Image 1 (cartoon, rainbow, N blue to C red):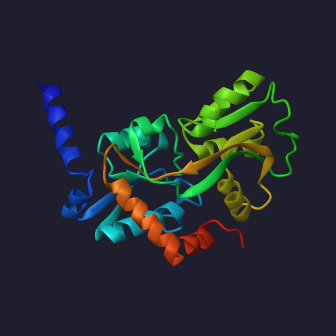
Image 2 (cartoon, rainbow, N blue to C red):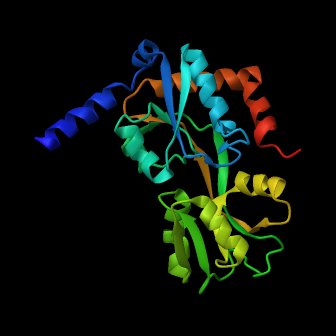
Length: 252
């Protein structure tokens, strides 16, 4: 009986969220799930509020729908895809790479940002780490359930690299800074942001590991994906998208 009551509670909680444009408009709120540890896309500012490139795009989607945006911090491992498929959030943005495997269980918007997986090392690269040079015997950090982990499993492990998996990206950065791992796999804009905020502490090493496109994520079959695409097209045509790139990502 307890299990039945818990199931009913979960169903009631999920029903409070929405998976269609009509439901979101009726509710008056678009619930965004994000892991706020990925500057400059989503992170907590000095005031404790979540901000960033992804957040501003999500606000534009909500505005075009005529509703408010509610932001929920969700760890990446729980965000993709469980928070979306369970109805815990209406949409997810957290530098989420569009992949064929993920598209089997969630709906993606069109690409809104082109990025790359790169190697983050200590400033000055004292360990002389390079890619695609031999990585045999090196310990490389990856964040759990990210495309960086997937690519590392496919490409680096067969070359003899040891992988250390982190639930929290910041813990991986701490190990890079302390010299406990040779490098951490992350997204290219992250390195630029780290170099701006923490001069001399981190650097990019070697060639890019892989290129990728980010997408907004929704429940399978949801017409919210089409609505997001319309907002994205409007923002690009009006210059709003470029203004956000200049604000958050383009290095001054």
